[in-house]
Amino acid sequence: FQQIRRGDIAREVALIASLSTRDDVVQPLGAWLNDGRGPGVALPFEDRVSLTDHAGGGKGALYDQDRAALVAARITTILRDAAAALGHCHAKNVLHGGVSHDSFVVAQKPRGPVLQLTGFELASPLIVPQQTRASARPGTALLPTALVRGYVPAYRSPEVDKAVAQLAQAASKRQLELRRVETKVTAAEADVWALGVLALNLFEPRRLRRAQ
Image (cartoon, rainbow, N blue to C red):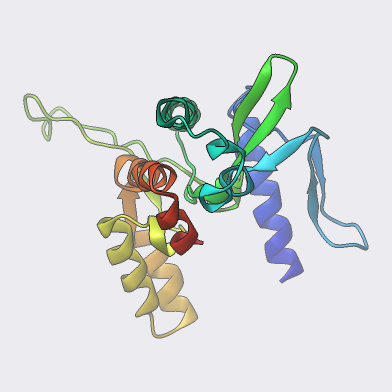
């Protein structure tokens, strides 16, 4: 287990490092893989609160004003920033793989609160297909795909649900590994669907409590 976990952490740190330094992505300072405490990741110290706590199931700081227009503006800002962070990941050929209310934190910066994307332990490199001249069709484009590794059940797209069901039917560890290699989804089907679910949950916080 420790060997597998060390490999996961090393891969995660490498993936995040490939995204370059951005305010909207939590950047690790480094990782320890052979420490007596077990493998782990060192993150910079900042005053952060999880988006889950910030929302508080409709009772957190996000909703601390009675004016609906103000709350809607705050949520819209969060979703815009979340989409920008995910868009940057996709542009760098990285699928987040675990978008949910628990994969974002709100950091207190001098200029004000900043939404940050974190929780990359389920991330996967996007596989960009090479469209050959013979297979190309006018007006069509092949979408990058990625391996399916996770997602909170409430945030799974139909395609991800189908892929997870196929993985669950594996009769052996060997068959599971083979199915992992074969079972892929596109970034749009996975991360973007999950972002849409997050939008519904923030605008209807009762849904957020159920998703938890």
